[in-house]
Length: 456
Image 1 (cartoon, rainbow, N blue to C red):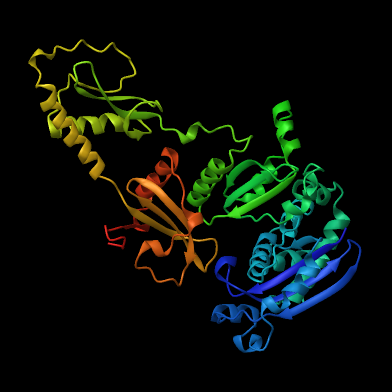
Image 2 (image 1 turned 120 degrees about the vertical axis):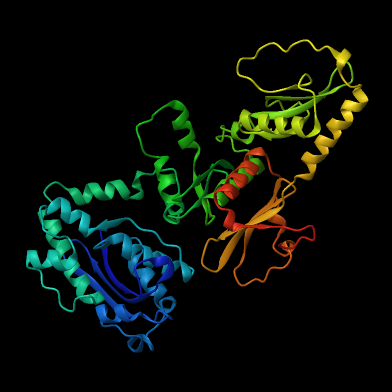
C-alpha cells in the first residue's frame, strides 16, 4: 500500500475560483519515503497580496514557473492508484481534482485526513492545525506555509499516526472510503472516474443497456450508497447483481439533474426505475358535455382519459382557478363542481332556470380561451457544469421545450440560437412543475420571452 502525501499553496480558499501556486508530493509506503516531487506553479492569475504575505510566493516568483496543465501528466502519475493523504485533505484534494479536470484528466482516489486521524489517535490536543499540532508534538516544520516544508511535517506526523494506531483506525477509515466495497462484478474504473458533483448517474447491465437512472447532488457519494447498508432483500440483491457498468453526466445544478433524469427515463424506460407515478399530475380541471348539451367544468383526481384543461399538484390550486373563471365569466355554480374530500353526491340539476345551453357554452368557450391565452414563455439562465458555460431552460407556451448548455461568451439575441436538436424534449406535468416551482423561488434567473423569440 502506497500513499501520496500532498501539500499545496493556492491563490485562495476554494477550488472553483482559485488556482494552485505550489505543490509538493511525497510518495510513502507506510515505512519510509520512496519519492519526492516539488514545483512552483504559475496560476495564470495575480496572487493576492495577503496570500503573498502568508506564503512568501509572489507573482514574480511564479512568472516563469510551469502552469499546472504542463505538470498534470507527472502529477497524475504520482497520484494514480495511491491513497491521497493531506492535512485537511478535502482542501488539497478539491484543488487537485479541479486542476486535473481543467487539464483533461479525470482522477479520483481514496483519501485520508491527518486532521481527523490525529483527533482519534492523538486526542485532547489544544489545536489540530498543522503548525500548533506539530509544535505540541515536537515536530519541526522547516519553511512553514511552503508546500515542501508543510508536506515533510505532514509525513512525520503521518508516520507517528501509523506507529500509534493501536486500534487500526487508518485501516478502518480506508474501508469506509475505498472502492473494494463495490461488488466484484462492477467495473471499478467506472467508479473511480465518478465526480463529487451534481448530476445523473446511469447503471448498465453486462450488455450495456441502461437499467437505472438516478440523480444526485454528489454523484460519487450517491452511487456508493447503493452498495452499502444492511438491506439484503431479494429485490435489492437482484438490482445490484444486474449492475455491471456505471456512467454519469454532470449537470451543474440540481434542477438540471432532475430534468435530465426525467428525460433519460422517458427515453430508455429502465427496468429498475419503477417509481414513475411522479410523472403524472394529481388533479385536473376537466370539461365534459352533459346530456343536455351544457359544457361542465369539474375539478377531479387525475384521469389520463379525461379531457383536461389544466393539471395541478394540489386540489386547492385547481379549485381556485375554477372559482376565478366562474366569477369572471358568470358561470353558474350549479354546472361547475369543486373537488371535495367528502365526495358528497352531486345535487340533481334543475335546468329550467338556466340560460340556454348555447348561451352558457359561449361563456365557457370565452373562459377556456382565456386559459389558453395565459400561456408562459421564458428562459431560465443559470450556472453550467464549469466556469466557461451557463445552463438554459426554455419554457414555451406553458411547456418545457428544451434545456442544455451554452458558452458563456455567446451573445444572445434570439433564443433559437441556443437550441441543439438533442436539447429538445417532450415534457410532462412533473417536469413542467419542477420548472415553475423553480421560477417562483428564483425569479431573478428568469428572462421572459416576447412573441418575436427575443428577450423582453
